[in-house]
Every structure is written in C-alpha cells, then in structure tokens.
Length: 231
Ligand SMILES: [Zn+2]
Image (tube, rainbow, N blue to C red; front, top):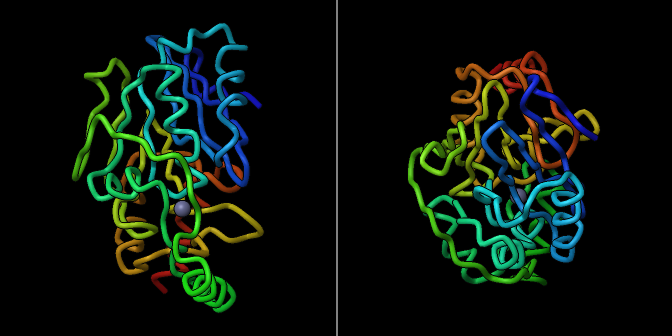
C-alpha cells in the first residue's frame, strides 16, 4: 500500500509481524518509524530497496517505544544502513537490555493477560539489543538529520513512548490503536499519562494518525474517542 500525503511525500506502511512500521519518503530523503517484530528485517530492507532507494541513505530510524514488536529489527537495520537511531531517554535502557515486561492491561481481559504474562514470562519479549544514537526528553527536531519532522514525548503506553509529526501526519506507535473499534490501546502502563498525551495530540495540527496496530485514523474519530474518555 502506498499513501501519498502530498505530491512529493509518501507514507508506506510495512507489515512486520503483528503491526506496521512506516517508511516515509520526502523530497530530501527517507526515514523509518519503528522496526517491527523480530525476523522481519530482510522484508523491511526489500521494501525499501525495491523502491529504488539506497539503504545506506536511510536518514534515521525512530522508535516510538521499545516493545519487541516495534524494536525487533533495530540492531539489524542499523548495521545494514548505518543510520542513526533516535529513541526517548526513558526507553534507552530497555533497548540495551533487549527485552521488556508485558505492559499493564487497560480493560478486564487485557488486565488478566498482563497479570499472567508478568507472572509466567517476566522477560516477556526478547529482541536483539541495540545502541541508541540520539536521545531526547521532551521533543526533538529531525531537521538536523535532513528531514522535516518533529518528535514529541507522548508518555503513557510506556514511559518513553513518543510520536513523530510529519506535516499533518502523526506516527503514534501504540499511543492509540485502530482495531475492532478500539482506539484506546489495550495495554498502557500509565493511563493518566496516556490521557494527557491524547490531549496534547488533540491540540496539534494533525489530520491523520498512524497507529502501529490497525489502519490510520482521521482526527475526527480520534477526537470522538477522546471525548468519550473524558466524558
Ligand atoms: Zn507497545
């Protein structure tokens, strides 16, 4: 699938296991948001090079957070491309460990899944550890890396979860989902923080949100979900 965000910009979702990572091509280069589940590195590279792009020219890799289904091929893709890796300060430790606990559930079913996961599989999901190159706290502009995007801290799903804003498009990782009518994610470590992040996202001049799980959603749908949440 190919989504044209304007004449010169393209967003390409790449299915990599249980969710998407996103290849974003703009007139001055291209970059990658998330790296998918372990084992999908070759597929991601093929998806890039089959478009005539030189993998060595990948401007950067940004991880929305370091769950295994978002960071699974980070080490491999860094090695192949040589691209710098951007991640929030609070996620760096998990990235270096190469595993994380099951996050907390936000509804009764996922609360049970989370509880069982934490009990029986404390080092839940493993992936090859990687070294970050660029760490940030509140926000980071990718202009210095040659791409017109801004990254903002949108905590809640995990402590360091962050969103990349490219024009009127927001790549939100697991801050929201768009699956089976759900927009509030089934897993979040801190729902109070997540709601604050939703309010922050609602104030931004964004038209479309791209979650890792499910299709992109329009702002109107997101705002409806937010007003349900705030009553
Ligand atoms: Zn996640």
